[in-house]
Length: 215
Image 1 (cartoon, rainbow, N blue to C red):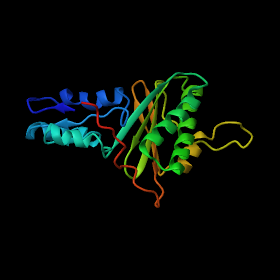
Image 2: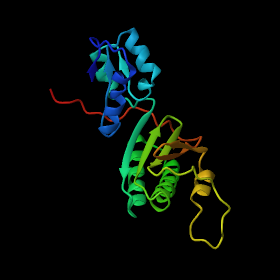
Image 3: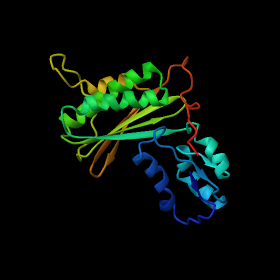
Image 4: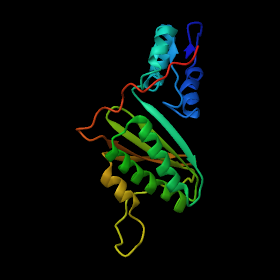
C-alpha cells in the first residue's frame, strides 16, 4: 500500500512508476499494489494515463487494506524469453501459470497457449530474437502480446503451402482470436491477439483468497 496523501506530482512520468513496479514485481496476485489518499489533481493524473486500470485507489489506508483482497479491473504480467528452442515451451508454462492465478476459463487458456507458442516460435525462428510475452486480463477477455527485437516489416498471413511443415502460425492466430494485430517499433514489433471468454463462463475478476498478514 502506498500513501499518496502528501504527494504532489506535476508530471505523469512520476506516477507511471507504480504500474512499472507492479509489473516488475510479477503482477497480480503474486504482487499487489493499492494506492491511497490521492488529491484531486493526482487522481486525475493517475486516471489519464490509465494507472487505475491495473491498481485500485482508495480514500485512505484502511480502505486500501481491504482492496488488497480484490483483483483489479485489469491485470497484467510479462515474461522475457531468450532466442532459444525452449522459448515456446516456456511461454506455454507462463500462460498456464498466469491463467490459473487469474481464474481464466480453461478453453481460453488452451487457445492462449496455442497463440503464445506460434508467436514465440516466430520470434525465435524468423525474427531470430528474444521476446517478451505480455498477458493482460479483464472480466471478459485475455489479451496476449509477443514483442520481438528485430526491426522487420510486420508480417501478414501468406497463402499456405500444403507441403510445407511450417508457415501456418499467423493463420492459426487469426483463426482463434477475436481480434488480432501488430504494432511496429523502431527496434522490432509486437503481435497481439484478443481472446474473449466463452459466454457461459464466470467473470475472471473476483475476490482472491487472501490471508491477513500477522501483526
